[in-house]
Length: 249
Image 1 (cartoon, rainbow, N blue to C red):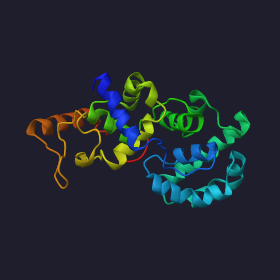
Image 2: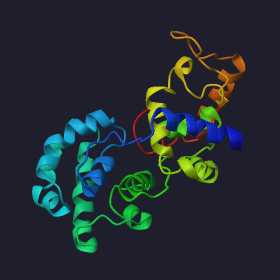
Image 3: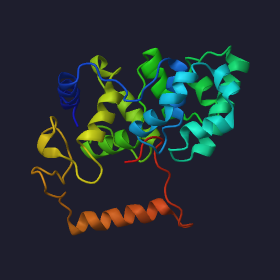
């Protein structure tokens, strides 16, 4: 995708949604950190349901530590991997109290040093809470970046680097929100809804679905390429490739 096309791509997304926001519910920066930390492999809707009662009780790291791991598990047991997530949230809360005076640091290295906090989570917090121009690459952004040709890469880090290089200044702050929402509601994993896409003419995807109810075009060549890619990703040990941190596709 060329420079002028990238500008137009984001201009259209911005025109449709001038003030994009995360769909996670939170009341302060600490609650945002907790919500994003437990959102891996879960939907925002599911996380919001799980944290509704929790965030009515807990607004600070100290309060979370006082709540305790077992009580936290009870609050978030409706989402996947809740045992590990509860353990991490308690541990990161203890670390925030012990090393940061109970405040969430506005620094990526300090954030990723917290238990359960990866680069994607740190980037979301830095962007949403502190207004930094970061690009949090989850499964949606990874898909949209590669599918459209906007930012191609074999890893989330590679896609992030491409976005950092290519996204023009007027759109850098809201870019990751626009891309997540676009991937979640329009450029869907199984069947992209290209017939109602605002940037369909700028997109480089060859299997565009231009009519509602149709399926993505798949040729024998692309099927073979896909099989080879999966085989390479699994590796000799037969292990699946790691997925980007974030919601399921």
